[in-house]
Length: 253
Image 1 (cartoon, rainbow, N blue to C red):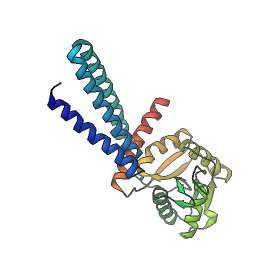
Image 2: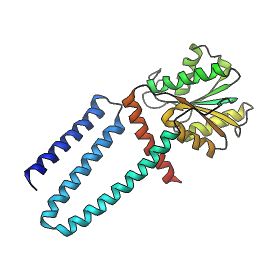
Image 3: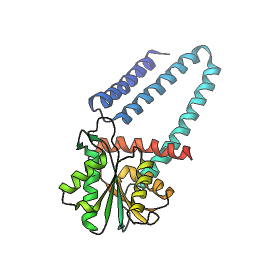
Image 4: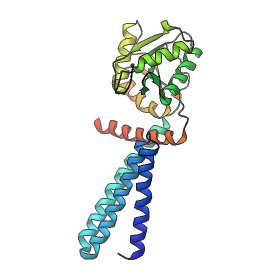
């Protein structure tokens, strides 16, 4: 390998590893972007090693390079399809009125909603004010580092925002989106509602496509209500993460 290639490799690796460290440790919440940068750094390293191998054993190196390239192309195509699906579903549906809405939880810091949860609660508040006959199922259990359940944090926020407590139903056991929706539909049924009818699902825009699919799989007619994610880089991080979640959902089927 000539000197220019080695220098180019070192520069690319340095940039990717620096980006990994920046996203993971400086910004903390951008774990998905950090992992993507780390993966790209690993791929560059593999091509570098194959180039070195090609100087001694050109034929095996060529075969391995082709296999690696095909695998990467297939993986990228799957990711692109999943990301396109996520982006196309990131919107509020037309005529979102429903007798019940499920508000999907997000992490709580102690007893305080994180930015992501607060954005969902803002969308939930707007929805409940627009449709005063609707009731909300606030769904989310208590995870590590959370002083109260996500459902309780949401109840406090919405009552302080002026939503009548008798319109708020708590589901405080769930730890996954699948559990959120299945358990919330059980709450709807227990309160005399129709879990097979129209049910609005309030969540971050990047999360709505998968949430709709899970709602439909549980027998309801899911209506998406999008909460806007304010920070552009945070929005990018979550959209990328959700594409992996969508791909995993496809694989699980």
